[in-house]
Image 1 (tube, each protein chain N blue to C red):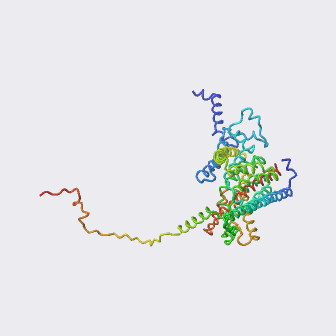
Image 2 (image 1 turned 120 degrees about the horizontal axis):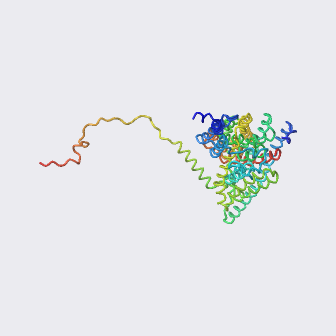
Image 3 (image 1 turned 90 degrees about the horizontal axis):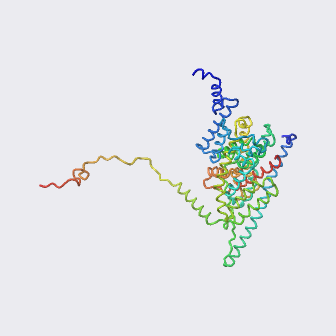
Length: 402
Length: 123
C-alpha cells in the first residue's frame, strides 16, 4: 500500500487533479482575482435581490460575472474578441461556448438597438411634443457626457476610452453598451456596471444637487398645463425625428431609428401585437442575453485595476454634471421667460435619460415643497429628450473616435 | 491607438466643444421642427372647431387654454384634489382611555343556574 502511494504516477495524478480543480486554480498565479470577482458578483446579486437596485439588469450581469470568473469553467473567451475584432475562426471551429455566442449580440451592436425598440414602444413622447423646449433641457443634461470625457482624459485614459466613459453621463445603459462595445470593448464590464449602478442610485445622487442649485421659491413654481397632442402628431414625431437625425448624424441612426421604430409601433395603433411583443417578450429576452454577456466580460484581469476605480469615480461626476447642467439651463431659461411661462428648475435634472426614474425624482422633490405641484408630466419631456440627446451624443463620439 | 497618437489637450477640448455644440444644435433644430408641426396642428384643430361651432351656430370660445384641457384631465384634477383633502382629514383622538372597569353586581340574568338547560322541576 505504502509502495503504491509512493509511486510517482499516483502522486502526479493527485497533484494534477488538485491543481486542475476549481479550488486549486484559486491558488494559481492571479487566482485571487477570480475569488475577489466571485465575491463581487455575490455582492451585486445581493444588491439586485435584496436592495432591488435595477434588478432586471443587475441580476443577469452579476450572474454572468459569476460564471465567467469560475476557475476552470472557461465559459467566456475574451481572446476571441481581442483587438476589437471578432475572430470568427474560433466560432467556425466550434470552440466558442454559449457566452461567446451571446456576446456577439453586444459586439455587433444588436442588443442595444433591440432594447431601444422596446424602450421606444414603452415611451410616451407626448409631453415632449407638447413642450418642445424640453429638448433644450435634454441637451444641457448631456454636459455630464462631455465633462466626463475631458475628466477621463485628464486621468490618462486614451481618447476612445474617454468617449466610452463619458457616455455613462447619458444615464442610458443600452447607449453606453453600444458605444463602449465599439470604442473600448475592454472597458465594457466596468462601464456597464457603473452605468446601471448609478442609474439605480439616481434618487440618491440627484436630490442634493437639485436642492443645492435651486431656491425654495424656484422649487414651488407651478408650470402651465401642457397642451393636448393629437394622434397624428404622435405618429409623425418618430418619422420626422428619424429622418432629421439620420440626415444630420448618420452614426446616431441605429439607436435613434430603433427607438423611433418602437415608438411608431406603439402610436400607430395598427400593430398592437408587435408593440406588445417588443415591450415584453423581446425586451425581456434581450435583457437576459445582454446582462449575462456584459457580465461575462468582467473578468478579474479586466476589472480589478485602477481604471475601474477611476471609471466608478468618473461615473458619479458624469451623473452629477448632467443633473446640474439641466437644472442650471432651466434657471437660465427662466431669466428670459415671462411670468406664467416659467419652468420649475427641478425638471431640468430629468434631462439625464434614466427614464422614468429621473422624472419621478423631480416629482418627488417638487412635492416635498408643494404637495399640490405635479411635475411628473412636465419632467417627462426633458427625460425623453435626454434619451434622444444621449443617442445623438453617442453618435457624435462614434463619428469622432470610431 | 496609433490613430490617437497626435491627439492632445487642444484636440480633446475642441472635440468636447464641437460635440456639445452639435448636440445642442441638433436638438434646437428639433425644437423648431416640432414647434412648426405643433403650430400647424393647433391651427388645424382651431379651424375644425370653428367650422363645427359655426355650423352649430355657437360662438367659439376665445380662451385656448381651457380648450386644451380635456375632460380626463379635469377628472384627474378633481380626484387628486379630493384625495389630498381627504388625506388631511383625521379623527382627532383625545388619547384618553374612556373604558372604565365596572364592578358588576350579581344579576340572575347572567346566572347559569337559570340557563335553558335547566329542566322544570316537577313537584
